[in-house]
Amino acid sequence: MRLLLLACLRAQTGNATTAARIQNHLHAAGHICVLKDAFLYESPAEIADLTSTDKFDAALAIHLYKGGRLLQGSRIPFGIIFGGTDVNEDVKSEEKHRVMGAVLEEARFAVAFTVEMKELAAAEWPEARKKIYVQTQGIKTTPSETFDWYRFLERAGIPTDTDRLHLFLLICGLRRVKDPLYLVEVFSDWHRKDPSVHLGIIGPAVDPLFTREVKEKVKRAPGVHLLQELPQDDLHAAVKRCFALVNSSTSEGMSAAILEAMDLDVPVLARNIPGNAAIIKHKETGLLFSNPQEFVVLSKSLMNDPIMEKEIITRAKDYVKKHHSWESERKTYQNLVLRLQ
Image (cartoon, rainbow, N blue to C red):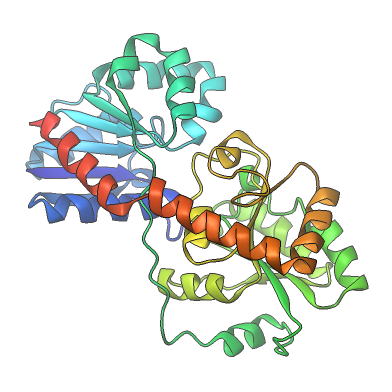
C-alpha cells in the first residue's frame, strides 16, 4: 500500500522520532510510507488534494488534533496515533474537543501508548473505546561509536575533568509544556555549593519566543547550560556518558527520551506526572520528584549511593526490554495497517 503519515516533523521532537520508527516498520512490510509535516498544511482540503494527486491508498496521523484534523472527511481510510498533549491538554478546548471527536469517529483505529491514555480518550469519546489499541513505544538506541565527549563538553563550557563531573541532561523541545526552567534556580544554587554538578538542556527551539526566555534565564544561571542540538546517534552517545537524564515536563504522553536513557543504562529523574509515573516506579526503575527541592535531595541520594544507582539501572533496563520491545511494536503496526485496506 501507498501510505501517507502526517506528524509534526520538527527535528528531534518525540513525534518526529515516533514517525520515523513507524515509517521504518511499514517499509519493512513492503509498504511505501511517505512522511509529511502536519505544520505545513492548513486544511483537510489540502490533504485531500495531496492524497488524490499522489495516489495514496490510506493515511496515518500522529496526534489526534495536529495531525488528525487534516484527515477530517478524508476520502481514504486512516488510523490515528495519540500524541499525548492531544488527550492530556487539547481536550480542554471545546473547539479542539469537537474536531478530535469527529476525527476519531471516522478513524478505522487509534493507538494509545499507555492504558491510562486509552482510558482518558475513552472517557471523552466512549463510542470509540473498541477501536483504541494500546501499544507502548518500541525502543532501540544507536549510540555513535565516534562521538567526541570531551569536545562536546568543551563547546558547552563544561569542565572536562570527568572523574568529578556529574552532568544531568534534560532533553526536550523548548516549549512551555516541557517546563525546562523548572529546576534552573535550585540547580544553580546547588552548583554554587558543589561545582561538580552541571545541568545541560538540549533540544530544538520549538517555541521561538519561549526559547529567548530560556536563553536569558540560563545565561544568568551558573552550572546550567543550553547545549547545541545533536543528531540522534550522537545524542544517544551523550546520554550514555552523562550521570542522569532529567524530565521536568508538566505533561507527557510517553517520553521516548526517558525510555532511551533506561535502555542506555542511565538513571532517570522525572517529574511526578501521570505520563512519567506510568513508566517509572519510584526508587525501582527511576526517581520521581514533585518539586525542585525534592529533585536535589533525590539527585544527591543517587550520587551518594552507587548500589541504589546500579539497582535502578538494572531494573529499568529489564523493564524496557520487557515492555518496550521494538519488535512487538513493529508487529502491531504491520497488522493494524491491514485494517486500512
